[in-house]
Length: 227
Ligand code: AMP
Image 1 (spheres, rainbow, N blue to C red):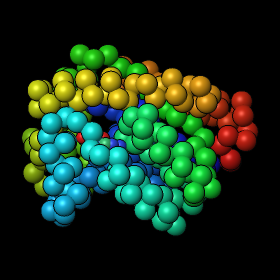
Image 2: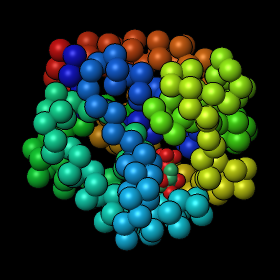
Image 3: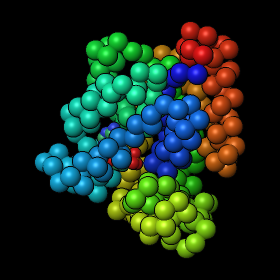
Image 4: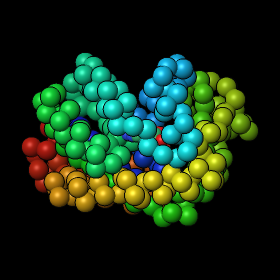
């Protein structure tokens, strides 16, 4: 099945985890603007320095920086059969800009998966989040702990916590999400693209829901998702 999907959901809603599983299942790229920006920061470029300041404050990185990264990424051949976008667009300004990028690339979005979850759970999840700096595997020391304390199951590297996953920054990121990103639910609902997912479940159950809702979508509108 080929699909061009976006994930919406607050920081810590599990959209990155679900996007990664869906990308492996469907064999299409998972494009995550947060990770693209962290790579830019690691390269110490001028854009990376601007991005770091914003990220550490729980605020959005300027649109022009994100837009050029996205356009360049969507133009790569591996996106020809679809892609899963995670973390973009993140504001109405970005969604409107994204329409222009889609037009230029002559493609359309099939579905927007919106993960709903309560705020208390979001904060708790971010505070316990860790990831592997080598292979990128994500853990949660409460919900999905590594087999050995602080060591990646895949490659034995020591796990790290993102600098913006502290409780203080987590609260700021949720505020930014509510102000900037939540209006996108109405924006995409008006385009009949939103599929709501209950994020207050286990990773496996959320993924089961996603697959069955995507199948339903496909049956409802065969043109939306091409088998
Ligand atoms: P994430 O890994 O998706 O939680 O993103 C981490 C941080 O990167 C966010 O809190 C923002 O500061 C920044 N970021 C990620 N995606 C975007 C985007 N589309 N636009 C602006 N900033 C972004």
